[in-house]
Image (cartoon, rainbow, N blue to C red; front, side):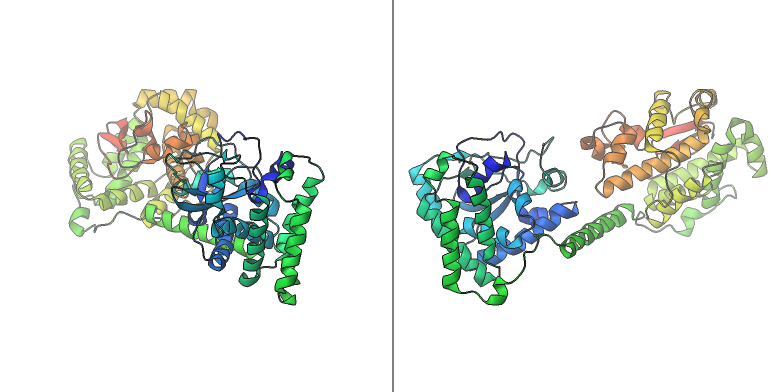
Amino acid sequence: MKRIALLAALGLACTTVPALADVHYYFVDSIATQAGKAEPRAQAQELEKIYADMEKQAGIEAKLVYSTNPDINAFATEVEGDKIVVVQEGLLEIMDGDRDAVAAVLGHELAHHKADHIRAGRRKQESARVVGGILGAIVGAKLGRHGGEVAASAAGAAVGVGAGNLVALKFNRDQEMEADRLSVGWMIAAGYNPEGMLRLQRHLGELESHSKAAIFSTHPTSAKRYQAAEQQIAKLAPPPDLLARPVAPLVDAEALAAAQSEIKAVADARLAEALKPEAGDVDAAALAPVEKIGFDSYAALQNQLLFAGDKGKSKLLAKNHLTEAQLTRMTATFTARMQENPALAERYSAEFFRASQGKLAAYGRDLADSYEKGQDLKLDPPYPIDTAATLFAEMRKRGAPSLDAAQQSAAEREVLSQHGLSYYDFLIAHNWWSRKARIALVTGDGSVMAKYYGVGEDDTDDVADEDDGGSKANAEAAGVHIGKNVHVGDNVRIGGKPVAKDGN
């Protein structure tokens, strides 16, 4: 397939129209800043650098577009008067190890614009090949090496060409030779080894010996193009050190490392912004004691009540010199304060989880630090994601986290005991996994959210919405956490749903 497709390289249009249902087009400058994977990002950045050099020498402005088409091709075209150069993924794959050959390709396509070959080709209307008008759809593509990564992370780079089409025209012998000649001159002026053009022509020459395609009857053979390029290089007499420069890859280790560093910096900044504690002061009045219990102590007490359950509640209240009526009044007061002050509610989250007990107490404290300091979770998962997803699905069927004492006992006996967990342990782990999934989503990985909540990755933005729990059927459960809309007291709530009745 790729051997046949190589016939189309540098404007040589094939007579067969490929299946292009999964092909998409992206502006290269957008991929260079949006791609969430280092390889396509670095590739786009290096393409931009080379293209800018060649564009400057050509004195032509044309938009560079990346196509996910795995066929080996590049072409120049126009859409509603806008000049465009399209470089396909298949071509970049075979040229990935030769930076100068890539410059030769880009210069050749710019030359078609410079010499006004596009309009001449349109007038002739010879064997025009429609290669697709794309308007932003980026789902389920079966792409090449980088295409899927680009589709997943550079939606904003999609090219919308309206009713127009991207068309690769068939150029005649003289036009192809002229494009090669101009490209060689620009390569030398821009500091690229013009022998990259010769290496490119050798590729075509190797192909010609295996094919008798009719296209060679109307286009110059690779041997002729090679000879013409060789003569042009000799005529222009580039500096010996330029000709001696060794072949270099399009993306070297330094460029890849720089792209990785950029992506990490973007991810770190997004994470810091997303996890930043709620703005606003928590003044002394908001923390003032109610029934002689300060706010932080109250948050810890609610965790202790949850851990104690129905059986231990009376003893715990007595230890704190509280009655049921006092607990109810205290709950109403602190809840009202938190509803007025999101920063106070976030403080409650931190203090609640910092008081965690039992076998997963460390995960509660990890969660508390994440809320309080606006940082990533530090611990490895308490159990695998598959186990976490299975447990959450089963517990949600039973109504968790809104279970009474009898339901909690049944859940522990029938589901949780197999994993050595109490209902309390499950709630701590669930909140930890919820935070873990949201953090992963913020950094561009929707797989944890999708796996845990049993949704498609396209739905994870809705599931992750911590303000309203999302709009999906399971979104309310997905928002389970101590946070902005916290409710505590007789119907203690973690997030939007009560975890137990009567303060348990």
